[in-house]
Image (cartoon, rainbow, N blue to C red):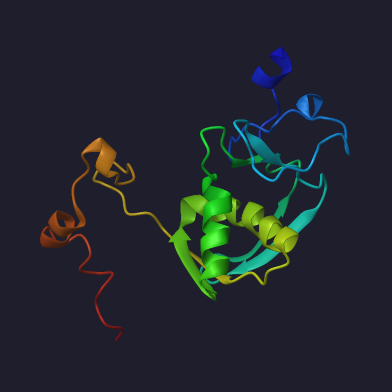
Length: 164
């Protein structure tokens, strides 16, 4: 168990789910209802996930190195972010997704879920995050300055000027 506390981390500092805590392959059971336990998606270790982001260009992540097994269903009865966005995008037949650059690695996980579900993945575009004067990302929960205020202060003048 102490291995989990010192597990290797991916390139972005993410703790990888320790392989020592994985149940043996094939030991799980099918369930009609997820019940009150956490469910993880077992990543295919060593599998390279490549995609082209509309802004960031070619991306490549390795399952088991850059990210590990990840939660898809929470014991409180709700899907994880990863599963929820894939299910929503698939149900709505979304063809293009725009998210913050902080979610670039999540796209690799989501592509594995699209594949597992047999769905075509959308195109992705990851925007830079808007930050405050100190460089912290804006978050309502932190009482961040609103976009309206930043706009009024002229923070976006350069970004919104027409070319030429």
